[in-house]
Amino acid sequence: QRCLHFIRKTKFLNAYVTVTEEIALKQAEQAEKRFLKGETLGPLDGIPIAVKDNFSTASIQTTCASQMLKGYIPPFNATVVQKLLDQGAVLMGKTNLDEFAMGSGSTDTIFGPVRNPWGYSRQYQERCAQNPEDTKDSSDWLITGGSSGGSAASVASLTCFASLGSDTGGSTRNPAANCGVVGLKPTYGLLSRHGLIPLVNSMDVPGILTRSVHDAATVLGVLGGHDPKDSTTVPEPFKPFSLPDEIDVRNVCVGIPREYHAPGLSKEILAHWTKAAELFEKAGARVVEVSLPHTQHSIVCYHVLCTAEVASNMARFDGLEYGHRSTIDSSTEVMYASTRHEGFNDVVRGRILSGNYFLLKQNYDRYFVKAQKVRRLISNDFMKVFSSGVDVLLTPTTLSDASRYSEFIKEDNRTRSAQEDIFTQCANMAGLPAVTLPVALSERNLPISLQFIGQGFREKNLLTVAKWYE
Ligand code: GLN
Image 1 (cartoon, rainbow, N blue to C red):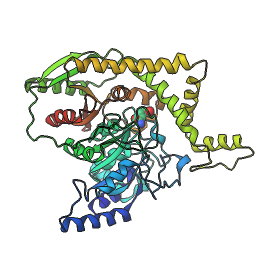
Image 2: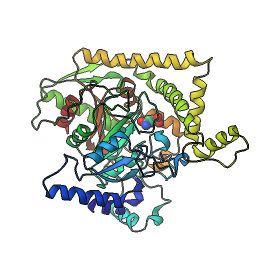
Image 3: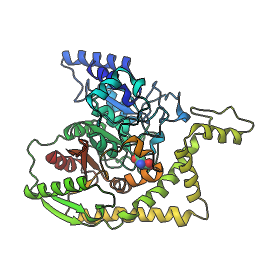
């Protein structure tokens, strides 16, 4: 009831695409009954959770914030959603995102941009809550970052205790950082992608957004593990873990990557990053400067790989099986083309075109194969650093605190979006786990966050170090 109350009060944030009020109330009632009988299913029984609208949910519309899938009702649940439901979690609704998770703003969505709960005066918030129409056109608000902006805003505005996002190049960590919540991108292969509508299959992972590192570990414990429906999940059994109360970082080696002193990094974030390194040192951790020399190539490399996989993935949206179908259909080809023209925004169409260009026979070796080689070099950079004794890397998550919407849309969105991911996307290319957590408030009173990147499948170490800093 309390979470639904907050959903109603913060409707102007546009965090939710669908609110599943009836389902939530029923699930909560059942969880309460189990609780009273002493039959609680586990740590998430009765806990309100929201899910990004690119995870398939049985009988609940799943849109990817795209005209293409508007009205699409999947016949099955994504594995991670099913796991939440099996554990008694209460589904509050589906959250807003950039169309097909392409973006870093949560501004390119058919439902309208998501607003960051931070940066409003109390009076402004009250005005919005009372009369959303009154403030609709105002651009005096901040973006959440993206693409899981709805999920980040849903946790930050207390409408749920955790939410699912997806992370292909930073889409869980970027909005988590902008909204002052914890965002965990698990190791590739630890969580099932079955039912997560793909962006880049070789990099996508379900992400977890929570209010604390402890909560992220709890949700991870429920979601991790092999899924026969996703052959890229690892077969080794996954053991849920809890984080120690007393943490000693004296045996920890923290790496500071030299190349992450990127152009455009705000002075404030740099200061907090430096301060964090000093605090680790003071507590007895070993802090070393390390080099990840191929970082500078990551944005271009990601662009080639991402768009190539997008071109292949989006081929399924042909107007026949799912969602939208154009009525301009004088031939099958014309129907395909007009369906895609009407169904996708220009970001999606642009990526399909770029991807197909990189995959042309004459370009394949020059771009696609080369990008795969660069990806390997980026991944090897991490392997070298970790095999030299470094346990975790400490980096910024974003270049600055949250941007104003009016500023964000001024620039070319695609260029902007690409630059924003500089600190996050390398972990996707290498498949490594990473977590962002809020560490301070900026001069503008907005969250500043830092990121820890860990070794593959060592989520426990990663989250333990993060919890110490929290
Ligand atoms: N911003 C990146 C992109 O637009 C990452 C998106 C994501 O992680 N889903 O592709």
